Image (cartoon, rainbow, N blue to C red; front, side, top):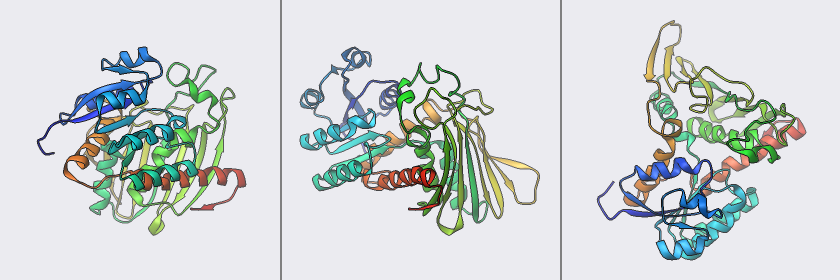
Length: 340
């Protein structure tokens, strides 16, 4: 990144996950945090930044170069429109992006027309283990990819108090497993294998206290014949000292070998026809959530802003993820494979 005056970053939202955003920004030397806004002013004050309970007032007083929106979907459209009207050139917005495809499409068009860059904070593809897997795939390390499986096993969904201590709104979400969580792997799979062309899904609700689904299988058809299986069950766990590091385990199989991701964040490779494995990536020792993926995404946006490098997950590009998500729910409803 080039040496220049630090970019001014203001944040909207001070809920549970925002702690990872604030921590990551504080560790990026090219930025300075200038304010935090939340309807709960005490929560904004607790960030240690200049606190506001009104977005317009924060923008007027702090004049940010980047607005980081750390809100649920209901708050996305209005906040982005406020940023557009204020002439903020770069916006980062949490996922799931907007309320539905129609709203997301409209916001993407408005941002593009105004020359405002909106990046969706879809950070899982920035986890170091997926970057390592991508590097091996691109180098031809396991030959032609034929299939992949991710087994989501966070082990946090059992009993009547599931999620209440961390994200209580999970209880009332009409769509949970895919809309809130599975989108991470829709995006990660498309990063690794290309945009899906069709999906087939079988979703179900196991914990009766929830409004939405918490388990299911999703089969994604990717270009060149790759099939990826998302096998999600929030009630079950996997072997890890931190169930939220990788949230499960992955196996990517090619004609010349296979890559395995374990719950400690390590990646190993086994050559076809061999018993021994070699380590591609050591177990997780990074600071921050999920291999420090939040910082990696935010640093990626800062680098693009300063140096003009290409951005991943602009809101226009992210519309594909929303279309795939909607296809998954249609597949469950109809019992058929859905073309994207």
